[in-house]
Image 1 (tube, rainbow over the protein chains, first blue to last red):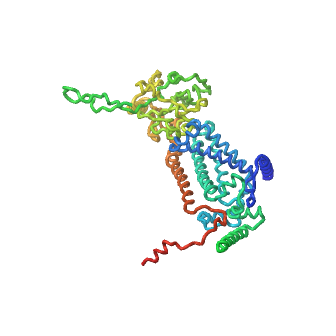
Image 2: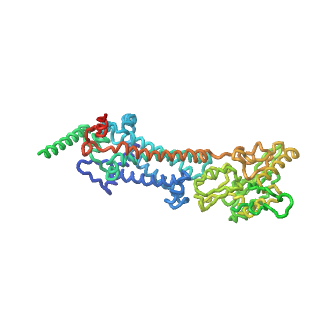
Image 3: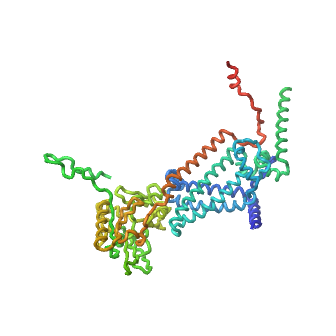
Length: 255
Length: 307
């Protein structure tokens, strides 16, 4: 099972790389291949459409704000399930794509324990055991897996409401909302971390590459795996180079 | 809507004594009275309903009863339900005219997410406005009586209007007009409750139905369609819920939990924004240009110098 997923994913990655390409400059590392990027943005676009059309119907206070985006109430209602279905289908492939690197480990548990230090910037570089994804990213991934399952089950029940009982619809309605709120919370943090909070991360999903500095800062374990170099040593050497350069400039100024 | 009291006489010239009718108030709440004990199942009300609402002919479904079809439909608001019961070892036929109950606390209206798709008038009639309906079907699950019906061609939901168009013109609903036995009546809520109470009393005292009573469920603050039943203790026998309720997901969840959830979302956005403002970005290390060692605050230093 796992092997066939791997094989399917490998092939998809190869095919996507034949169509698109990822240019890696000196001092950069390949982080996300074309296939992953296309998948991510397909998931993202369908999710945002589903989110906006869903929140239009979520509460009367958003109805008038959001339904015009989709051409009015009836069309919003008509489109929402299709956006949702598209999201779940795209995410299914994303799941196959990231199923491996998202596996939960003891290191992730330790990462979550130190969430407070992480969010208050106690350390300038991440612990060395943080690999391709950190505990927070994995948590968000598995949260989406859970939410997508809840969405698709309750969504289909609500879509074909004439086939099921009244109370099942009523429960689905609440579960669907809870899944949406969970996703909204994760989504806000995801966008923040991916753009404003960690410069360079948005670039990794746009062009597929990151700088080596970014890699040893945020994902030292992954840095070690792809470069065979020690992330701490690389960091210290870069720091030393910085100090040397400063000294050279100072010396020149004195001349 | 014009005030019905506008042309009520206030003063009369050279009239000895008080103004006749002074202080009278118009009863606004309307009600349909259905006495299931005198219904003969003729279905004239069904035909009148289809006629008045100009509904297209709908194929009937035969399922070994005299019922026209299993449930009300988007173009069949009014249906006589036939149920078989036993009384003193004999067969007893329970005929109940099924249609929208026009609840005082309408579950469909509570459930509806579309602005203006369901309205309730001062007189108690609950009416669907198909122009604003988005066809989500929440009202169907909000209704304790399984009344609203989805029309797959127009993607809208329909149900009995209590002939709001007729009532607005001072006419009784079409079903009332067609009833040949007088088991259907239409008037103010207080009148109908009184008549129903008298009829139930008569059934108890004269006709030997010791448990006869009026179905006007308090769990949804009463309805604007009330039944006189042979046996008020077992409304399920007639297909009526003993204790109709609106799902809490359309009351507490919709009006309390949902806005709280949304508020938490907004707080989240503010939270990450102020996190960024307070802590700055996590830049790849070492940062360019290099970090400087923490310097003593010049303002603070000066302040300390002062005596």
